[in-house]
Length: 155
Image (cartoon, rainbow, N blue to C red; front, side, top):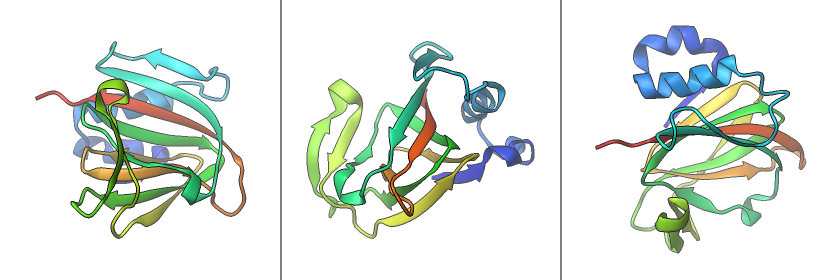
C-alpha cells in the first residue's frame, strides 16, 4: 500500500513505477470536477479510470475486498471517507469470490483492520495483498467524488 497526496506527485515521481505514475498523472491532468461518472480508457483494459459519485456508509455496510488482476489507485477528488485496510491473512474469512466476474474476493472479516482517512487530493495505491473496505463514513455520511484507476498486473 502506498498512501499519498496528488499535491506531492512531483517529489514522489522518482520513486513510483511508470504505470502507477501514469495513473496518477491522469488523475492530476484530468478536470475531474466536470467529468461525468463512468469508465474512461487510459490504455484499454491495461489501465482505465472509474469516476464515481457515492455516499459514504457505515463500515458494517461496506465489503472488504482484494483484487488479483489489477492494482487500485483510489483517489478522493472531493469529500472524505475512511478506507478500512488490512493485509491478506488466512484468518480473513472469505464471504464471496468473484474473481472471474469482478476481479474481487470479498471478506466477512479482516484481521487487524485499521482505518485510513482520505480527504480531497489524497490517494491510496492498493496491491493484491491489501484488503480494503472503501466508502466508509468519516464523521457523518457525505457525498464523495472518487476516481479509481485500475492498473493491470503484468507477469
